[in-house]
Image (cartoon, rainbow, N blue to C red; front, top):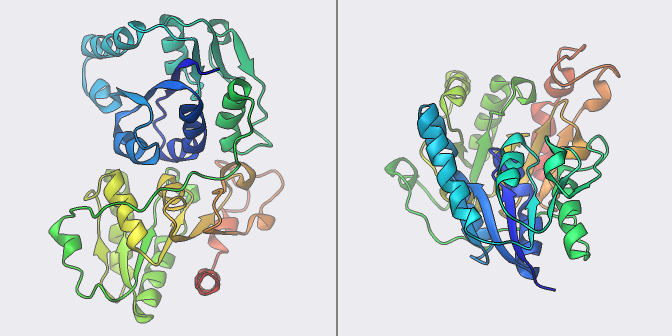
Length: 338
């Protein structure tokens, strides 16, 4: 039976948004869906889901920029918009305090969410989860499967070939587009996830000597120092895209590349759905939970070097699982992907 659904997925994490796309696609194929999503990912949702649902954008940046009264007014406008509709079911995929608050304020015949929701009293049903042993993909898929019954393929939803994007002069002036392009993303949300900047500098030089144009990706003030450190240690030039790309421009650019190398991060998960060959560098992050579910991705990790008592933010071995990944390891992985 086709239902009228409100699906809540206003995650602030690009990686989570990418990982949930297959689940969102399954829901929109089977039901009439209104989707609440962070407005930064609007263009990604439009392309990936081919406009099969009505999208309500959560203006996180706008809310954050305002005072308390302005935040409440903006949030209330969003709630009022979705309260105008009657839903057969409200599905919370995010499981955060934000979505629990929305759940409490919206009318729906049945409210469902993952077992780790913040305020379970607002839900009619929560789906048990074991986040220690399951991929993040399952956080989303198991909730949807409790509605659809049909199993969701455990693989990322791949993006279609994207149309040409207008880029800044910095990128359109690549000297020789007949040369292969390589994208490197040297940053991550946590410093312990980052392969050393000096290693990325060596990789950039090695790829340049192999005939690649090297493109360094980055956004936000926190990623600027890493790119500067790479520039300081490289002997050959690279193309710096810091703060010059929106999400669809980023995805399109990665699709134009022969390969992508990066740490465990949102852009790595985005790269994994573009069809481009990806080499993902993992330190103490749980592979069972965060490895990309994509046939185009190769993972490099040295987690066997970790102390059994290590925690991601409290390493007993100075993060040797990350630093032990060598330049030769990465180049070998690239060669194997050719």
